[in-house]
Length: 193
Ligand SMILES: C[S@@+](CC[C@H](N)C(=O)[O-])C[C@H]1O[C@@H](n2cnc3c(N)ncnc32)[C@H](O)[C@@H]1O
Image 1 (spheres, helix red, strand yellow):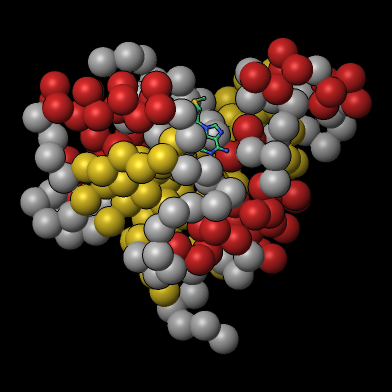
Image 2: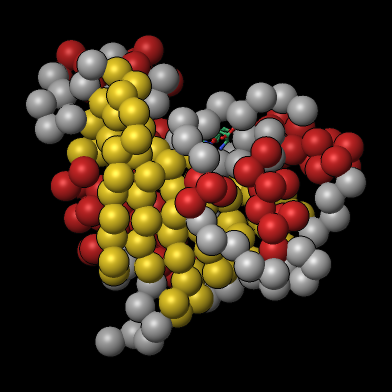
């Protein structure tokens, strides 16, 4: 299996249970999808969403090689998730939200696809409030997941505006002079207000 390109271990912080449906935003080679699929089996399933055919093919090959059947890999953008409203128990993601051009759209899509009471547990890069303009505009830093990153306050605002609650952002380790990897958790309220 190709190595994970993530910045953390979202599957370690998402409590997954048999029967649940898990969605991995930007699933890449599918490593976190396979781990999740095993943890929600035999009755649950894990869905990987990615925008590139190459990664979807790699992920499907990895799932077949691992003999994991309760997985599905779908093509699409995390800003426009091709899943029905209220169908997912847990959204995970490993170092992908920072790559999205419109993070508020991603947060709204997360809130839409989650079931009431559903959980969000991701690893991502968080920018320091003092990240300078040169770093923000640096394309090498962008592909390294640094330049596009939100600050803690911006991330929290995007999740709150989308309707998510119980937001926790825990920085885990430094990945750049101006950025850290973090675990971000939130929950969709049980019922719409
Ligand atoms: C840094 S890799 C992380 C892959 C995987 N999560 C892991 O931990 O190994 C980013 C992945 O997200 C996908 N991706 C990036 N932006 C995306 C977007 N806006 N919508 C869907 N997939 C996206 C890329 O195709 C790539 O497979």
